[in-house]
Amino acid sequence: MKKVLAATAFQAGFILSIAAWAPVVLALFWLRPLPRYRVIRQWGRFNLWWVKVTCGLSYEIAGRENIPSTPCVILSKHQSTWETLAFQWILPPHVWVLKRELLWIPLLGWGMALSKPIAIARDQRRKAIDQVVRGGRERLASGRYVIIFPEGTRVPAGHHGRFKQGGARLAIAAGCPVVPIAHNAGCFWGRRRFIKEPGVVRVVVGPPISPEGIDAATLSARAEAWIKETTTALEKREPACPKGARARAGHG
Image (cartoon, rainbow, N blue to C red; front, side, top):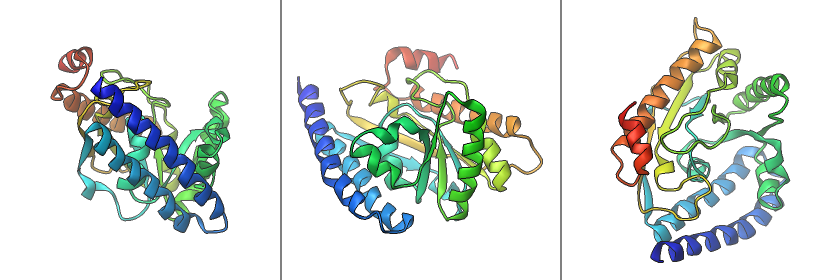
C-alpha cells in the first residue's frame, strides 16, 4: 500500500508539472532552441527530484567525462520513462529521435515539438533513416547532441531488442563519434508499471566510438555489444531487478 500511495503522489505531481511547464514553454516559442531548452530541462530536473522524494528513487552516473565537448550521437538503452526525464537534466542540450505521434499529445507533445526533435514515421523505414540522417546533421551543426534509442521502443529489464543502424549512419554522415549509454532504470520503473521501486538507478556512459574507417553495421554492432554487456552487468548486481531479469543477466 505504501508503494501505491508513493506512486500515486508521484503521478499527481508529474501531471501537474506538465500542466505548469507546458504553457510556459509554449509561451517561449519565440526563443531560439538552446535558450528554450534551458527552461525545458528544468522539468526533467523537477521530476528527478519528485520521484526521489515520493518513491525513494535516485540515480548515480559514471563516465560523464566520456561525453565529448562537441555534439555527437548518443545511443542509449531504453527500458523506462525514467531516462526520458533524467537525460534532459544530466546530459548536454540535445534532441530526440522519436515517433511523430508523440507530438500530437496535448500540452506534453506540443512542448516537445518546440524542442525541435527528429520526428519520424516508423512504418516508413527507408524514409525514417533519411530523416534521421538529414535532421540529425542539422541538429548537430546547430550545437545540439542527438539521442537515439536504437531498439526503437522500451524493452523490459533482462531483454534486448534488435538495434537499428540509423544512429550509426548519422554518425558516419556527420563525422562524429557515437557515445553508448547503459543503465538499469527498468529494474525500478518498469515498462507500463505504475509502482516505482526505491533504489538507485545506475547510468554508465561509455567511451566514444569513432566512425572512422568502419561501416554503419560495424559501428552499430560495437555500440550494441557495449550497451548489452554493461546493462547486463548492472542488472545482475541489482537486487531490485525482477528475479527473471537477473536470472537472464546471470546467463549472459
